[in-house]
Length: 129
Image 1 (cartoon, rainbow, N blue to C red):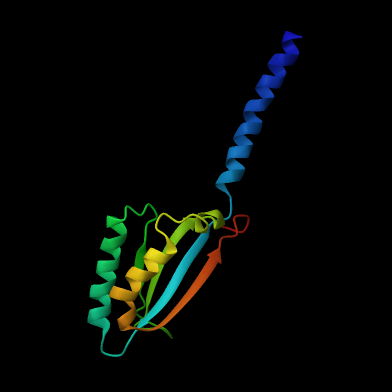
Image 2 (cartoon, rainbow, N blue to C red):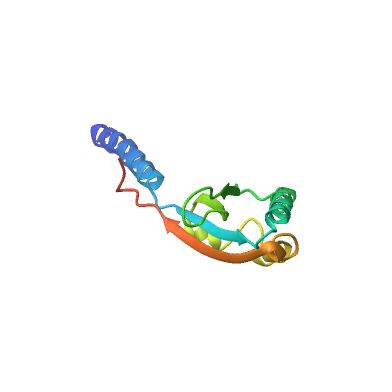
């Protein structure tokens, strides 16, 4: 009887490890917003964008927000504002409410933006190099 319990206990550890590894390969979501400043308002947009990042820090936002500038290609002059390594459930309870985030954005960034396009990308954990 003790041998059977020991075998069960020993087999439970690898199963738990496999379960944890499977969770590490869970699908993650990248939330990206492509923003194009109005013609001649790039400086104002960048100033507003810096203020927006500071606002997120002030709100103790736990999700890192990053900004990329598109330097070449079809969307040259646009910016990509995003978050990565999120899961769909994270969008149900964001660290900062969507309403407060949008209200602040409308004050410091939106007046200088010609076009905003939100996109969501999902990783494919079983398809990788």
